[in-house]
Length: 248
Ligand code: F6R
Image (cartoon, rainbow, N blue to C red; front, top):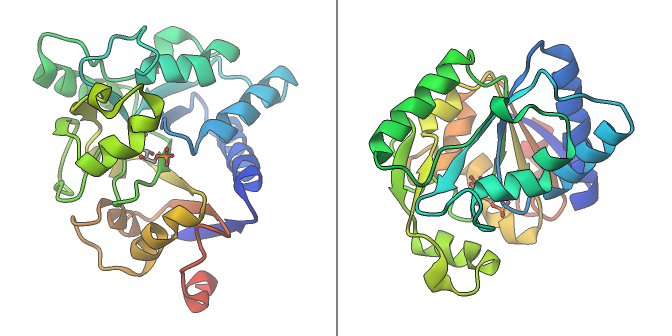
């Protein structure tokens, strides 16, 4: 795992933005895997700025988001579809027909999972997947205990994940109990992965990620089996990682 240490959240967002623009320029018809949550918001803001300055175009970019809540319509302000439009897609020149998120309101949820897999494969797989890190090691909504061999599937959300996400809702009771997420194997098929982690509250999780045993009990450790992963993390997030490991 390549580790890029930056000072703070601003620097992390800047570095991630540079990194992504470089990949968009280098890879023709780039397929990006995107995440929601707080961590990539700064990255998305900067991508919008770079687009407005004429430094990058998303005309030929296809995107696949990691996950979506079950039961929230696209127009629900808490849906990930809404989040992505609001934070990124409405402000750049991506073609909405090239934007994909799992659909959270469909009659056949299992069918939706297979269809999402098919779409990713038809696009030639993800070139660069952006990930955030859950406090319990989740990536996408793959909670501890999820098989490394999992494909896009429906998940029951962990109490801790619902609590962590409750800040976006009026109350915890409104946080959906299920989501559709790309599976761990689906994520691992991305040609390149960029994991963004910021802040002291993630320091223990980053320590586990780097120093802990590779195990389904801490899903993000699977990333150590991928040969092209870049962790961009700030000083707070790397605060508990041994110095010798950072030099590797
Ligand atoms: C979001 C996602 C989640 C988040 C993770 C970290 O699409 O799949 O795995 O990346 O929960 O969230 P934040 O960035 O809010 O700390």
